[in-house]
Image (cartoon, rainbow, N blue to C red; front, side, top):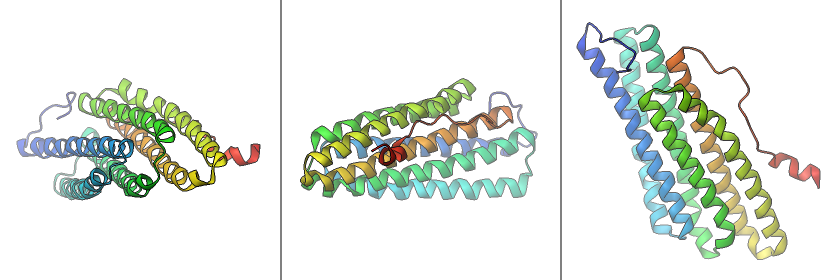
Length: 238
């Protein structure tokens, strides 16, 4: 139950909402572990660990479906209003965001086997740093969700710019590696896709921050989200 809500007359309704929230927190944990282990697999060029991450994605998908089914049931049978309605909608939206993060983690892991054939430890370093920042954002978002703190949601929302800046720097670094030696091109392309997947994970974390802000306040963030991804400008700058 949200700390600011009073217990409902029907006690089972409280339990249904609580269970819905608990499923989402489990989904947070599963996705965090997937991202963490995908980054470990990249760092150690470990295809076996990468394959384990890929297989775990089905658990995230299962939770997403369970949350959707439970949400529909609550909406149909309880007809929630005001805070309760926002709560159910926010959980359903956040679950969808986490499901997409699981997909991106899986996509990163799928490239580890090919990258291991021609590893570039010096180039992969930037990806590890980016992964650490994304994991910190996700953990902060998880805590913000559990504690229902708008200040944590806003901190995550504002922090997306730093992830974009790292992505921009890595994009330029990998282009340099490709220009230095044609044999680096294949590995760098895989690392670029991995970095883009991490950048997209950061965007989905920020979406959850917006969902939490709406859940708590009933208002939507109206200002433009801070973005620092300038990779689209590289070719035009020459």
